[in-house]
Structure formats: structure tokens, C-alpha cells
Amino acid sequence: MEEPTFVQVQDLHKSFGANHVLRGVNLAVGRAESLVILGGSGAGKSVFLSHLIGLMQADRGSVTIDGQNWAELDRGQTYDLRTRFGMSFQEGALFDSMTVYDNIAFPLRRQTSKMGKGEIKDRVAECLETVGMPGIAQLMPSELSGGMRRRVGFARAIALKPEILLFDEPTTGLDPIMTTVLGEVIIQMRERLQATTITITHDISSAKMIANRVAMMFKGELVHQAPRDAFFNCDDPIVRQFVDGKSQGPATEALIKR
Image (cartoon, rainbow, N blue to C red; front, side):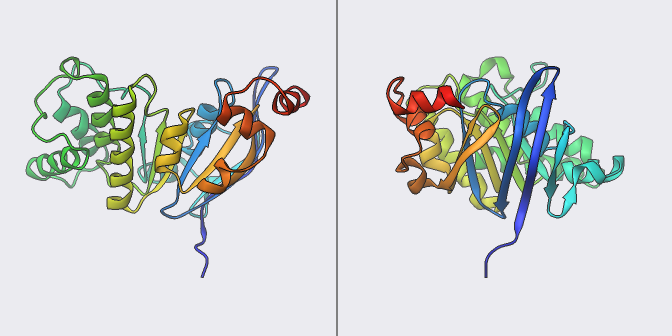
């Protein structure tokens, strides 16, 4: 039997003044699926991610998570639904004045009153183990490399054992070896949590590594979606323009006409 849709986006529109950023986005994601959304700068990926987690309200259309429409929830329901998400931001977005331990413990202390100090300590250690970085809890973010900061950000994102993991450009600015390491960590986190994973990136190698399904965002629209292998072998001109990195021929003509 086909798994029911867990994340449903229907005809999503968002404008900032005259800038129409999202133009009728439609998307359905199943439980424990790993979706990667590719697209260049300015395609609308980060704005779309903000709608998925309920940080922005759409001008038109809807985002529904496990049957709950963000626009129909009161403040308490919004808070409860958001705790089912874990999000990793670009560059890790750590609190520079806090140790690694306190960065990861932050959501545990803020969003649950039931965990004692010992339980929080155990959960922080478990999260660091999951991302392959045990024994660094007392370091400061300034003592970490870029890749280490990203992994600590991942550890914080999974602290509350979320059902949905969102990654915003998780490998930007990293070398190919660290990009592969982070891809492996993302896969491991998803498998341990059985989480639905949505990643936005322009990194094709990462997409090939972590995705079950890939979508292409261009000028605020999802112009093509397919299972990973079918996506990278398709003949859609916009996908080929992005994947092949070519700026001439039919692909460019299609880009100009859109």
C-alpha cells in the first residue's frame, strides 16, 4: 500500500512587493522520504523552506504537515507542530558564546521541562555520536573547523528526535571530502530517526548521494520532479542546463522563454 503524504504543498505563492518569489509550488513528500530541491541562487529555495516550517505565511496556497495546515493553527498548535521539525542552517548557525554542549542542549532545555540534567547530558552525547563527533562537548564554536560546525548544527537539529529534518545548503563552501562526510552523516541521521528529510542545495554531488527523489526549482516553480536516477537522466532542458552547467543551446532558450 502506498504511504500517505506527510508533507503537502498546494499552489504556494509568495511575493515581496513586486518580486513574485514563489509561483504556484506543488509538492507531496511521504514519510521517511529524502527529497532534495536543486536550484540556483534566487530560485526561491530558502523562502520555500521557511514556509515548510511555518516561519512565513503564504499569500496564496497551503502547506500541510501530517494533516495540519499551518494557516489554520493557533499559537500553541504552531509551537507543537514546529517541535516535530529539526532544521540545520547554512554555516551551522551556532551560538558563538556557548559551548558545543550548550548549543545542542539549548532546544532540549527550551522545549522540554521533563528532562533532567543527566538525561540532557546523555542526549547531547548521543547526538554527537550520531554525527561522528564524540568528545568535543566542551569546545567552543571558534575552535571548530567549518565542517565540524556543520556537524554540530546537525547534532542540535536532531536533539528533539524530529520527524522532519530540513537542511538549508548544508555543504556550501566545503571541500569534496567534507561534502561526502556530511552526506554520510545526513543519511545516518535519517535512518536512525526514520525522518522525512528535505534538503535544499545547488550541490549536485550531495543530491546524488542523499536523495530518494529530486526536484528542480526555477524562478519560484518546481519545474521537474522525479526519483533520483530518473531525474539526473531526464531530458528536461532546465534540469540539463543546471546539471550539465552549459549556457548555450536548447536549454538556454528554454530558460529565456520561462
